[in-house]
Image 1 (cartoon, rainbow, N blue to C red):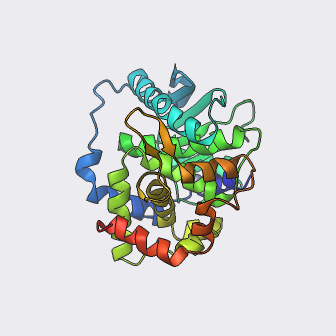
Image 2: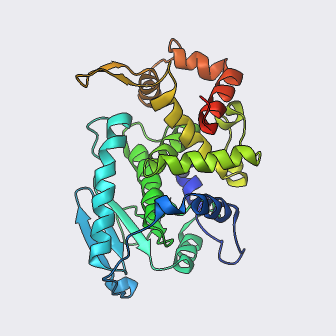
Image 3: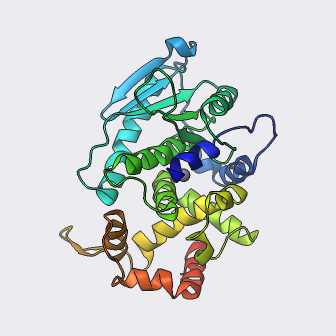
Length: 301
Ligand SMILES: [Zn+2]
């Protein structure tokens, strides 16, 4: 349940407070990667009020928005296309049921909703889960349109991964694992953007040692929202790039080895992972890992 609280906690209250830490993080990162995040223009916007909002379902996803049916359909299609990536890694074959996404009309609506239905909240992330809405039997992933559709895809995926994890029979894993997976798949929409953002955080001294990153609580994520990008990119590095942890596939598409995937799946299934080489890496050799990771992010490794 910590993750659920985290998402609520990370959701709102920013309109009054001016630019929040998370806003600043996102704005700076977006400015640096703007060309890659350029959006197609919605030509058929016909806004209605929330009571008459458009709802479209594609596969597992139902998206509700006041913007247009085409917009709702696009978002649902893209989320359903992203879904198999995290299903395959987290729990192959597990079906979480219908995933409902509410794209509230404005940031004010979003904050108001978060204040009403969230136990705790802040402005750190643009989506949250709730199961506290009276009169409904589902838990929507709640968000708003920040202007960039890619950013919106990212926020929805972050919430959807948390929801997928939470609905599994085993439920939420440890916080670092949950945030690592949610942030990694969020960044799957644009890993170059994640890398550029993280380069900027290194230059400004806004990263934390991996030792702390793997142990920090919700409060630290709130105080330093850059941590979400950092842990998401760390997962990308370990899954796809680092020689002794990455997944290796041969020319016939067969998996040769996948140490970090095995480690993650072991943890997610509650298996003993103490014999895994990744367990030693994350348990003992963190200075080496920090240096290697920084070299990778800064482009020399
Ligand atoms: Zn999260």
